Image (cartoon, rainbow, N blue to C red):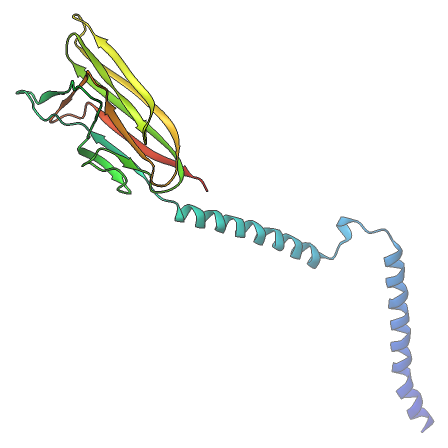
Length: 214
């Protein structure tokens, strides 16, 4: 019975010794100063994954915002009401300021431009860019057009065509911050005229959304 007892107790003694030795080794390790290089590799891996997940969340949010953004862009050309054999015709002069209706649509992404009224209506709050070109083929005449935001004139092209200069282009543009529902359009000032063609896009009006704002 004694021999049997000794054989049973031997493994227990070994286990106690091993545990004590491991505890002492761990204490000595803990007393050493820690550095980034001695960190648990699992902690390092977890920290890296957490940062990566954060970056992915931001990228997904940016993509969501870009997918929800509104595409807005248009270009339209003026057409003459009366034309000659080559398709040219003048609009104006009129006694009062007159809205120009660029009825020939080249591009109208978002359908914010109306070829019936010639006005662009902002579909969202944002910053937009507009550009316009007027063409003239007339001697001794005032030529040019004005860009309006709601009831305010924001840009103008103007020239007096003398006897020796009967054909010209003039362009201008503006960056505008618009609220939803604001309108932008071109006006022919009183006493002015502009030339267009039934088959060529000479006098044009264009605009597009740069970015939305809250």
